[in-house]
Every structure is written in structure tokens, then in C-alpha cells.
Amino acid sequence: MCGIIGLLSSTPVNQELYDGLALLQHRGQDSTGIATADGARIHMHKAKGYVREAYRTRDMRTLKGNVGIGHVRYATRGSASEAGEAQPFYVNAPYGIVLVHNGNIVNTRELTLKLRKVDRRHLNTDSDTELLLNVLAHELQQASSEGDLSPEQIFTSVARLHELVRGSYAVIAVIAGHGLLAFRDPFGIRPLTVGKRVAEDGQVEWAVASESLVHESGGYESVRDVAPGEAVFITNGGEMFTRQCAQHPRLVPCAFEFVYLARPDSVMSGISVYEARLRLGNCLADTIARYTPRGDIDVVMPIPDSSRPAAMQVAQKLGIEYREGFFKNRYVGRTFIMPGQAQRRKSVRQKLNALGREFRGKNVLIVDDSIVRGTTSREIIEMARSAGASKVTFCSAAPAVRHPQVYGINMPSRRELIAHGKRIPEIAAELGADHVIYQEVDDMLAAITEGSRVSELEMSCFTGEYVTGYVNDEYLAWVEATQQS
Image (cartoon, rainbow, N blue to C red; front, side, top):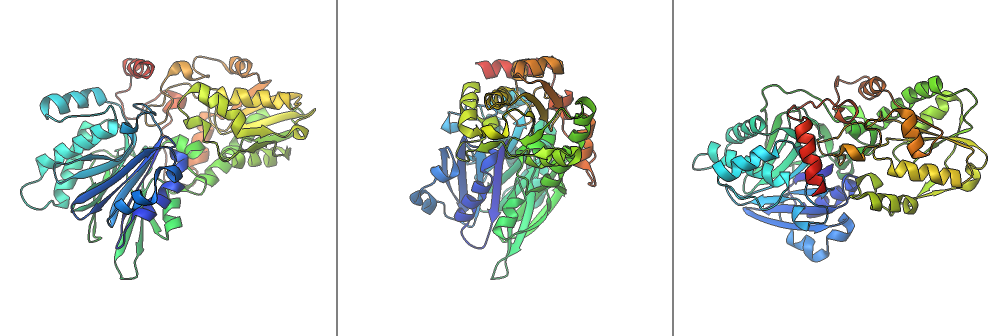
């Protein structure tokens, strides 16, 4: 999971890129980078850590130009500690291309071999973003003739990339001297939205970003999502060209975006994230009512912040008092996207504090957005008991995560997933809860897609079904082995 943004404006874009990345900080905390184009020259700054820590005034002054891209990262491939894995990535031929990517490529082994042995391209990192950039660069070189680069040649290159690459990818690139390119994988797994506004001089300005809230904050009108398999090319003069570049596109957005990853004030695939989380709460309440004896719950409490809408609906529908028992230190990062188990465990106590009088002598139902490794959940349950709770029922607004997620979320190892190969009573015992209740898969699908044009969701971590193909036991074993090394 990463956050990406691209801007094409009539004025310098460095400050707006910074502001947009700050809004997307929840999508990655390991590193950040900005690249801008001033004519044919690319300027770039990358650093580890948060957006607010990574850029100094001297850095911003070097980021000249009216077109640019930005990125916030958390590691799914490569090392979180290696600054060399930070995006954007740059390649000088053809034209000079700088690129950011959100997602994860699953056929990296085959692509790496092809690029090195057949296309004679050098890769300097283990990043699948550098791999994707070089595939695009090679196809552009093959498709373009002498002279200027045409939208038709760009779209031909993206179509060929779709044929070669398997996995999830939302991409924004700057082609020096030409303009801004954006495209999504044929299933639209990772989000990408387009916004526009009209400058005082009448020029149309464009924004492309992972989430629609970036457009709203910057005064852009949210136009639409980039469609699955579609490429959007915007010239330096502000003229937009679009083309469907995939042979069989199909909209299958990631369910976890709605459950946890996205900010609640975003809209994805025409679905309000906040309203989807309210509906998840309604469905979860029905499941709780089926499995929990009446009168066995005194209060409903959320784990702030992403589970709050679901918890409010659970309390309202069940007619149980809603209370805020956990308080959050907002200066600690999201534990889900921290790279190591020990760091996650340590940060839970720094991140949350339990208010004793809300727990003492009560049967507490705690609602969280999901249970992945169980590290955070176990600590929370222990905190509730230490604060005096008589009984703890722990509920997940998402179904049980039983399988690796290989499309850009850091849950690649089966051995790390608390629900893998376990029955629910076994999970409850391991977490230290009296009961554990999960959302049903069908209920999650219905809650998220209700009233929208979306009929499918990417739910591989819940079902073990991988929409792009290619992912099998051999591949999963290879991923786990590379994570250990």
C-alpha cells in the first residue's frame, strides 16, 4: 500500500505535491519522494520517514516545474530501511521518464530475466517499481519512431505492458518534455482518480491521485476514476487523451481499501468509504446478534479511528450503549503498516491508552476494522482486561484473514496470519478473548458494493482466490522465503 499523486499545472507544483502527500500519509510512512519536470529536466528529492520530516526549504526550491509526481511508501517488497527503494524511480531513455507506483507485481522473476537477458536493461534495486518503469521504457522505445512522441505510441506501449505484467498497479509517470501519464492494471485493484480545475489564466489543470480527498483539498473537481486497463495521457499544454489499453478489463477493487486503508472522506469506484464502513457495521451487528447471547454485552467500543463508523452502527442496531474506551496518541504511526512484529507490539501501548472507568466490571464488545497478525488485537484485549473488563468479545468488521495478500498490502506470509489454518475458538484462545466474531465474506461484499456499479471485490486474503491468476503455492512459498532472507 502506497500513496501516489501527479499534478500538471500552469504554476509550480512542488508545494501542492507536498500538501497532497501529507493528505496521503496514512498510506505509507517508510519513505517519500517528489519529482518535478522543468521542460526536459527532471528534479527529484527522496528521503526516509514522514512527509513533514523529509523536505526542507532547500529541497523544495530545487523541485522546479509545472508538472510532477509524488509518493509515500510502506514496504511490500525490498527493505523498509533502504532509502534506495524509495520512489519515484527515473530512467533516462527514452525521453527521460520518472514513475511512481502503488501495488505489487507478481511475475517479477520472469520480467527481471527478460529485461536483463533479452532487453539488456540494468536493474539497480529489488523494487518492482523499477521493474515496471523499465518495462514501460522498453515498450516506449519499441513503439516510438524518430521525432515527437504521440499519444498513440504511448497507448500502444501501455497495452503491451498489460500483456507482460501480472499483478496490481496504479501508475503515474512524467515523460520529460511531453506530459503526465497515468494507468491502472486491467482489474483496477489499486485506486486512481482524476481531478481537474481551471486556473485564473483559463488553462485546465489536472491532478491524479490515489484518493479523491486530494482533489477536494486542492480545489479540483473529481472527474472520475481511471478505469481498469485505461491509460490517461495529459500533454504539457493540458490536453487530455484516453484509451482503453487492456483486452479484457474488469473492475475488481481491493476490499481492504474500504475496510481499512483509505481515509473515510474518500470516494472510490463511486463508493463512499465512510458509508461503506457504516454498512459493514450494520452487517456485523446481525452476525453478533446471531452468535452472542442477549444481555451478554454492556458496552460497544471502537478501536480508533477506522473502526469507529462500524462500531457506531453495531451499537445503534443492537441497542447497546456506545462508549469510547480507547484513546489514541496521534503522533504514533499506523501499527498495521509498521515493518516488524516487535515494533508493532511496542507501538500499540504507545498508540492507545485505555480509560479504566469505562471498562471496570463491564462485558465489553470491542470492534476493530480487521484482525491480521493478531499482534495489535492481543495487546488491546490485554489492555481491556487490565483496565477491569469482566468479559471481552472482540469483533472484526472484516472477515478472517486466512491467506496472504500479494497485491500491495504487507501480509505475504501465511505463518504470520493468526487465522490461517485455525478455527474461530482457537483464534479467540490465542488472542485471550472470551469470544471472537468476524464479518461474513458475503456480507462484506454486499455492504461495500451496495448501490454501486461494482459487483466484484479483490478478496484474496479472505477467500484465497487471486483474480490476476499466476499466484499459486509455489509462488507463495517463494514470497515467504524472500521475506525471511
